[in-house]
Image 1 (cartoon, one colour):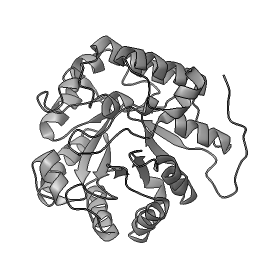
Image 2: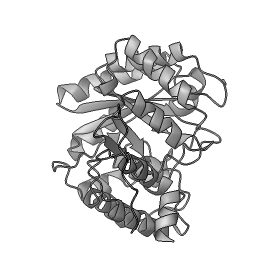
Image 3: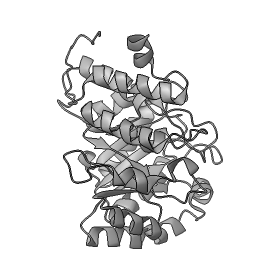
Image 4: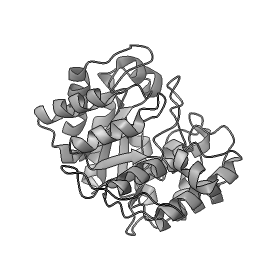
Length: 308
């Protein structure tokens, strides 16, 4: 299988962490239910390919996201105390109760930078979301769990349009202030551009959030995900969310197509001489297998090129 020719660039990180969201964010938008056994196999294949962080599932209510109604069954078959971190998304304290019962070590909460999306996704106002998250994060930390915070609609909102950088920074800083150790900045509808990425990261750094505590989560709706990832690299970010095969979207955001494909990201990173710990061959094989489970080709350009 072909691999990129490595040409390191000065000023970029030597190593990055890829936060794989395929099993949760990638599959949650699929209309046809994926068998529980296939989800478990998917996660195990991703771990074998070298992914060190794999977001396994979500404890949302089944009627909201039917695809993830089998979260307890999936987690029961995974090694949650092994070397691979397997975070779980939780929306509230009821979700945290399930996470604690399952033996999860890391949870993620999913906030919004805009009032409109907070109401659509959380049934809360922009301000009310913090009241909802506060006891969840506090209890999680009391039980020794690590907490990641997502902030969505950071680069644009389908109902509100442009979102001021200052607004995003204020929301993200408040989420971190609740006790999260990492903040994932999300371009939920894929409208961001490299200059905007750098401005937003600079805004967080100016507000006292270390760049090492930031992650980025790009969607490829407008074909900007990889260029935005490179801009984040130049700004010093070392944690990148992506989805194997380019699966996923956002069920509550019109026009939000697939996530940045893990294979496309790995191809770029390896070409830059940046270490990921991931076997591109095994990753492509995994996404090709999942494409067969789903009955359609993987959106990833790298998967199509290498598996075609």
